[in-house]
Length: 178
Image (tube, rainbow, N blue to C red; front, side, top):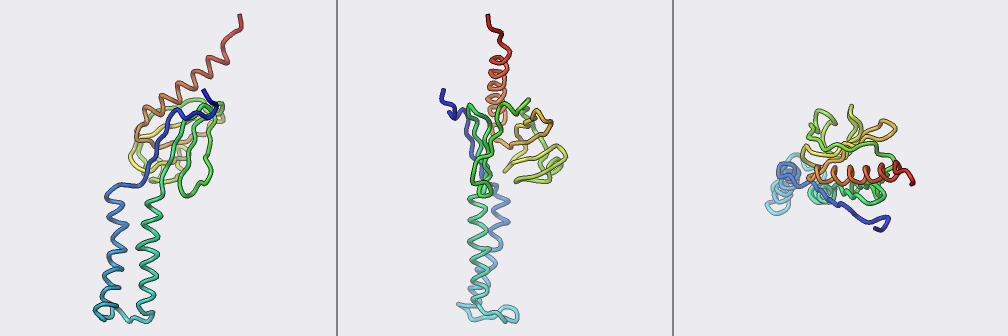
């Protein structure tokens, strides 16, 4: 096995219909106002800024924000070195949790809102969380006592991969020479 061989890979994105319904309300609203201002020459409000202000706002909220949400997501890898995560677009480089740092991994069903305050990169009473959707993940407990929740759609598989790798390391270090 190569030292950086990928054992597990998962990509998660914000694709819940209700999030996209909320995100797309703004562009539709701005589009309707711009249509009234430009095509129908019907002014909405006092119109002190003109149609160009509406167009700029539409570009920001109608194009920029939906694009930002489309590219935002959590990439998770398990390699021979450790568990690697990258929360796009906030992390350019991978965050690596080396197997030497990890004491144990648990596949859990949890409450993202109650335990961590929602989805995204969050801090809660149980530690740090990286999650995009759902309520399943792998809780990593480190040798220094800190904990990190990694959201996963395949949390049992990810946990199994991590646990298997941790047990291989434990066997390697506890094996006595004959």
